[in-house]
Length: 165
View 1 (spheres, rainbow, N blue to C red):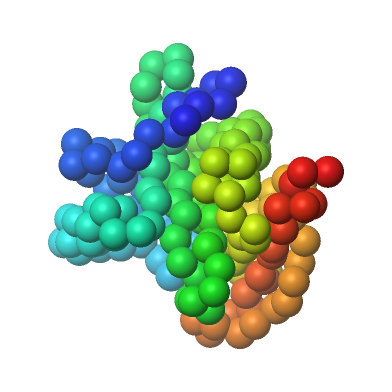
View 2: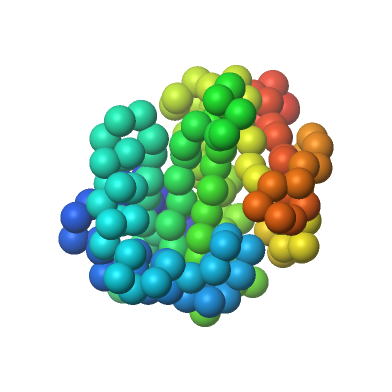
């Protein structure tokens, strides 16, 4: 998949070092339970690779201009067991430049027009105002707030008919 400025490429073995930088970035991981210690990054990566072979989708986001990895995006079963959840992590150097919005917009198109799902959700901490604004800017709406992982989590949702209009 691609956007105007990015290639969205299925996660592969050779992406480990780029993904490790995301896993270990304090700013990226602020609302995701903290950094993943270096000694655990390989196991986390291998687990993610395995899940990508069994019904989940994981991609690296690379700039078209130089192939640098700027983030990760995924589509995985949400813990509610009913819906798929779109998730994303972008390195701080790329925050505020519209890359996440560009990629998530492309993901929504993929979700509704290629996978033909009828609904997708996203979960973020209510304290992560930038992420909440991003989800609202692509048309997702706040469905509910839950307490999970010791913090308020905002559950955003979008249904296919909203995307089609």
